[in-house]
Image (cartoon, rainbow, N blue to C red; front, side, top):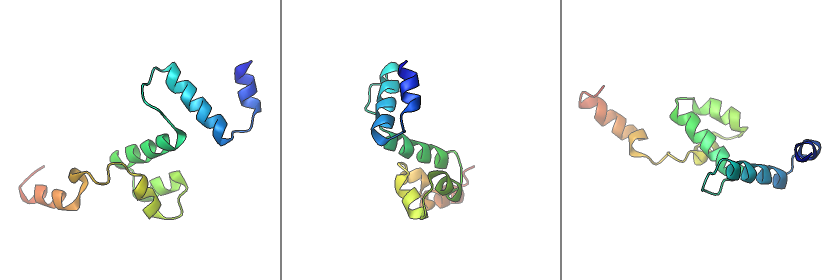
Length: 94
């Protein structure tokens, strides 16, 4: 019955938040999850997997790629910095 009520209810922000929290509890995930946090994670994971910024921008329906870059949680990681990549290449890295 609960699944039917959820299916017949418009997917408002509160309903989605409730569903994410319920799924996290059922999966025994100890951290507080939000739909917005999952969105950040999806964008970060896609970019880390090599999906182009443009494709992730389309995925997220962002008008500006700067918005998509702000969602990338690993954007400050040194191993993704251009200087690191150049130094690695000059040092003969693979």
